Image (cartoon, rainbow over all chains, first blue to last red):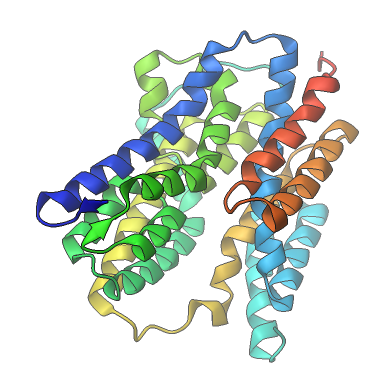
Length: 104
Length: 235
């Protein structure tokens, strides 16, 4: 336990900021210690897109039906046009309209 | 991965990156607004809340901290929670390493100070399409950081009395954006297999493992495909 009186709060925030800096710098630093053999590069390549997928999973699981259909709309636009901003815009629009219409 | 050239950075690159990410930053503003409003209900002073937004700059972590804040703070659990939630940044940084290593050490780390989800995703995409774009990382980071501060401050000042962002679909911006970033790149069987494994593993971790482990578990499962299935050189 640590007190948040006076400077205590600043200290807690500073420690958190340090931990965040570690997460932002750490990946590059640790990878820098590895030999960049083809197998390591291949791991990084396959892992990078997988991060996005793993971030998406709980969003899709927790979303309501309107949100999921919105994501489906985004996916549709991406397959047809490959334009991210168009995909995101339609996804939000579909979600908002469905919720307006009482579907959630 | 396509051929990689050393990233450069001019003021014009930063400006371009800033404007590219700004539309997505609207979500970060709204998220920051929600955070500011939530922080009003906590025992944190407004100054502490702003200081945290400025230096910590990690939405999900900051929401978790609000729940744990009091006159006494369990410091170790708090820092470990922060580490677990933000551990995805370790992977995001690692994914940019093959390209960032071409920079001098100081610039390499300086460009990571405001690493965040959206500017990382767009930078990775550029990189996979052979575009050399440090401006997206840095300029985009500046846009996201600024909107996060503006959102927090607005939330603290206005309090509740703001229309529900959910009703206009703003809670889905990040989900739709991440999805569009997954789908914009080139697809092949190797990548698709990695993504499927990542999705299954992340789902299982989300359901059955401790909170905040799903990104690491999913990413490592997807990466494992890369260990056993080497990419054929593009030349």
